[in-house]
Image (cartoon, rainbow, N blue to C red):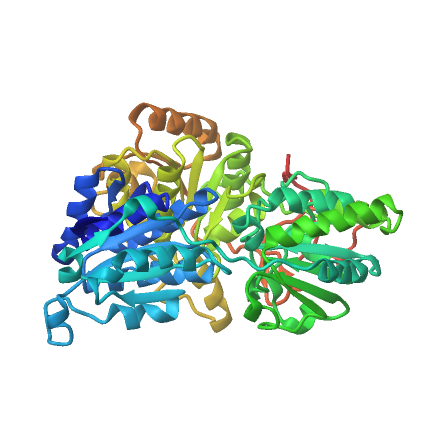
Length: 605
């Protein structure tokens, strides 16, 4: 046993739990923690420019690699409230991050002390656990419990609030005997899997819907193995994108009102059975439950018991970690295949693959200003298959999901349910801090980019290079498009005549000069205005990133108004632009939207 400040014991627990990086902003009430971090020297600290940015960096850090736990740190009061959006985002997507806040001394709580706020109560609705530690001797055990809670069952965030006098108090702590608590994860029984397999085997046109829980559980290889043994096509959700490679013949496309493929929606509407694994039936995926469920049966596998039946009641539910469930699914499927008990799905799979190869959206537009579809086509050409994309919300994200290709788990990093503007940039920095080697491309509209643009300086200061594609139409594009239902275009334009932007730059009236701002924050930036600049711009951006080891911004000047395909039901998606039908035998009744026209589009490579 050794005597030490309680906060040093906390840092030693962080070390034992595998923490090597933390993101934060120091301040008076959390300075004891920073003093302990400095003394120990074992945990790299990345100084954010905004505390919300620190929470999103921790989020991106966790999502980047299996087993990661992102840590964000802030002083008392507004630092904690600034991180609430980050905690909500992590909670919504089942992402474990640890938020540590300073607090006023215990004697000053509820006595109008400077920057003292009941952050425990504020954070409780958006965390798995939020606690103010009032006894110094509890500090190491609270941190131990935090990691147990974050990782057990459905993962999620935890907030620990530390009064400054609790941090400084001396306690006895025996580091040599410390061990992390076992993590609890429910596992499906053999009988449950066999019941689900029997229901699946009795169907004619089954699909597997793979959610983010498959990626969280590091079970993507098992998912692909199960699909290949059974021959059943897979529909990844937006959070599950990458669990099966886009170019795999059994990857049948994404389904939904916005972030979906035409062939994915068409295939889903022809299905009669759905096995959902690690997904939550989010409304952007389902549309109305009546249309989504009509004519098909459902089995739902999820790690969280209260998730099963929350949106609609499946025909059969299994509470299980996705890795445990898929392990048994593979075992049973292989046994049944060896015994000749598995139904032949080759005809159904071939139909799904035919739709995937032929029901595409047009991407090859030559206009200036640019159409966004062309930007994504060029990104597919410019970036390798192992590129990691980071994005949050808006028409940029929706079109990105419709046109980009993802081939590996954790190569599409996206906050699915909360969708806070500004998330992309700091999350990309967190991904880079977790993985110094992966090619990282962030994707933002101009408004998302402006929300936390100051975090570019973090990338410059701490040498966290990545490419940031900004598609600039000087609009809150998604909100403008949704305002069409109200016959208005009101307070969604970001355009103004910037007195500092020369006319010859070709962005007159577009408002903020993102290139100038990015360069002022210590980064590099390139503006692209026409299709014949794409290839050179991508090559130059990557060269600049390699040379300077800072974020490089690629800004594409878009036409002001482009409506992106979306709708009110998965069978009623409006196609605003020309779409393709590479097989005339696919009639308009097989798809949704406008007339079919010829053009260029890119299936997954």
